[in-house]
Amino acid sequence: MSQQITKLYDKDDHICLFVTGLVDGEAIPSNQLVIIDHGEAALFDPGGDLTYSALSFELSKLINLKSLRYVCASHQDPDIIASLPRWLMHTNCCVVTSKLWARFLPHLVSGFVSERMNASLAHRMIELPDEGGRIALGETSFQAVPAHFLHSVGNFHFYDPISKALFSGDVGAAITPGQDHLPVDDMATHIPRMEGFHRRYMAGNRACREWVNRIRLMDVEMILPQHGKPFIGKKMVAEFLGWFERLECGVDLLPGNFHVR
Image 1: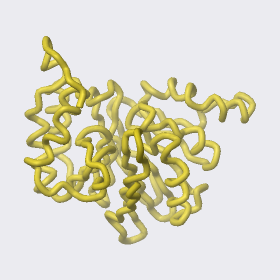
Image 2 (image 1 turned 90 degrees about the vertical axis):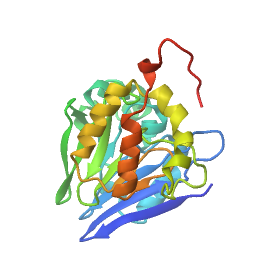
Image 3 (image 1 turned 30 degrees about the vertical axis):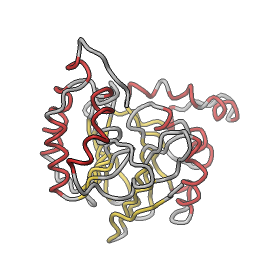
Image 4 (image 1 turned 180 degrees about the vertical axis):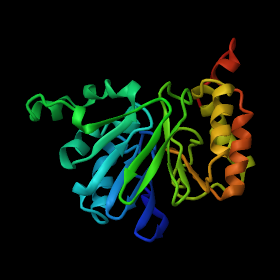
């Protein structure tokens, strides 16, 4: 395991952290993003049980875990949010996710609910409408950016306007074991590490183009996927967007055979 915590931004009591290398073995490696503003923290796609112990330990060095205000889930997959019961139990966080998935999350937290005498999760949930929106954190806010049908029918990415970092979930994902903390330095050699996954797991090119058009209107300096290397700097961000908007994927490839890579 090559655990790394990269400080992407640290100025005026605002910190942006990119966490990689918490999972090894047969499980899918996953990255996490943490934003801290004036003592309040938000954690994005916290992962499953394999990440919880190491991630909570590292976070406890920086903040009182009780000050974790949000756990944000881009979508509903186990590697995104399966550790939710432990975050609910050990912090006072609220869970931010699409309204489409909010009603499914109780299936993950039966132990938490039973220990709290069948308590409702409603007061711990923030259900995002399809258009997304801004969520207050400390003295600023972050933005939930719609990314629907890019791997999930109800999908959101999260943008920090201060560090100008976009946490992009499965968009931009690649398998780069042991190197996830290192930025992409050559798009041509990186594309083969992304292409098979994106062709299978993205719904179609129209969804890709809609997302790219939205992101181009934003001031994005970094795209940080949940798997693999980040895209750092406007030049690399632009190269990724150019590739993604032209990608044929999902239903574009029917009829035909898919090959999981």
